Length: 299
Image (cartoon, rainbow, N blue to C red; front, side, top):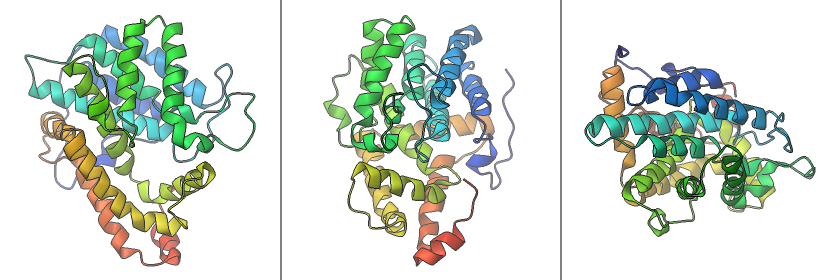
């Protein structure tokens, strides 16, 4: 398969794919997948992706349309693409010992539905899904249990998916998770990493923090007095993220360097570049008024 040739000079992460189009992201995920596995093995995942869109848009039996503006379709597709790039980078680095096909498929399904805990059922008409922020991981796992059973996955497959999703729970040390083997652990650490760097590297991440503030407020999460306060404290949050991805998730993000070098001839980890650009830009915003004049990207 011919690899893409993209000039590395000042290329930005958001220029590689149209992140606003879910099916454009899906095609890029497929592209990363078929470098290592048969294309026929991706067909079923496309059906799962269609289910995800139906679910989020309120056309899936028993569920309302998503109503959380930060944890939306694009958040999930951002994480999904980061996850597929991490898998690709790992496989490039470990040509003779690639991740097993079945576990990769389970990991992609887990990624796709890792935030379904924000969704409300049809009979849940009070507030928005943001009220489930503190328990959304457990609710996502509950959804996965039902969904994977319906789709014919085994209980063992679900247990793998559950452990992978648990790596996105910030209050849980990944080392405390009872992984069945090292491969399952690697994939869990990949999702834990992708969930953080996928959202923080988004071109409109700083603009979308306004939405996150109101999700936190509905969930009863204290510590942020205003949208501006959350914005400024995001620099401290990034320090926590760095500690987690470095020390708790074993610097898994470094697999991305193999992906960008092989696929695009780029010698940088574009996720870290994008995140640090956004974090540094926060220093230029010194008041609530400036927040709304300097953050003007369409979200």
